[in-house]
Amino acid sequence: MIFGLDMETVDVTLLGTRLLILLFFAGNATLPGDYIYEDWNGDGTIDDMDKYPIATTTNASAANFQDKKNYPLMNFGLTLSAQWKGFDVSMTFQGSAMSYVSYGEQLSAPLQFDGNALDMFLDRWRPVDPKQDPYDPSCQWISGYYSYGGTTPDQNSEFAIQKGTYLRLKTAEIGYTLPKHWLAPVGVKSLRVYMNGYNLFTLTGVKGVDPERPTELYGYMYPLNRTYNFGASITF
Image (cartoon, rainbow, N blue to C red; front, top):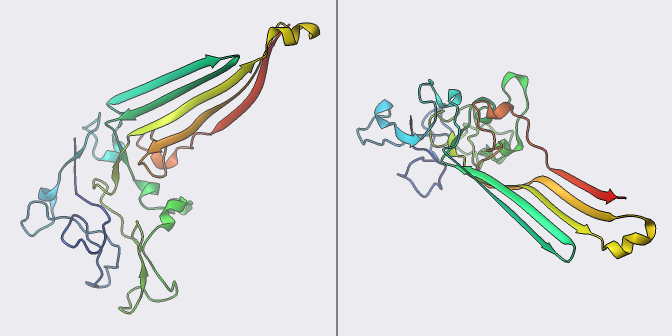
């Protein structure tokens, strides 16, 4: 069980809800879009007493979520196939539920270790004029999902931990077997042509990483390839 802070980016009109977007400067350390946390127990102080269960894990002894082997508690799959007048089609779906993805290191603070960053980080709060001093009270802002400056969300907050549920079309294949009387004149017993694909699409709320491979190092995993094949099976 993970104890964390309740966070999310919300519209500025929802003042008083879980995560607020600050529109007024409270000093040079604060900018529009920075993260603040809910005073969950209402005692006027943000501390460990505001943490409560927000996620589950299969290795609760680790110090933080990034070190936990977060394998899903539920896996499922579905295989469909059909044939009609020489045509055949098959599809395999797979997915999982009751798991969580942790956004740490490269997924929470990009450009670490002189590395690159995912384009999803372009959706961030930023000044309309990139040359203007962001701490100037007259600075106009474009809203986004991520904060503008160097602040990062707490690694055990709802902003940094997301539900890892997904459904993926893992494989699909369509084929056609030519009638035997077409093939007999050329000495061929059977001929089937087909087209298939792997990792064709995924339905998930997870951003930037592959929910199929739970690990503490999501930000360093090479993504799965989407593959298409064309071929034929011939029997003489």
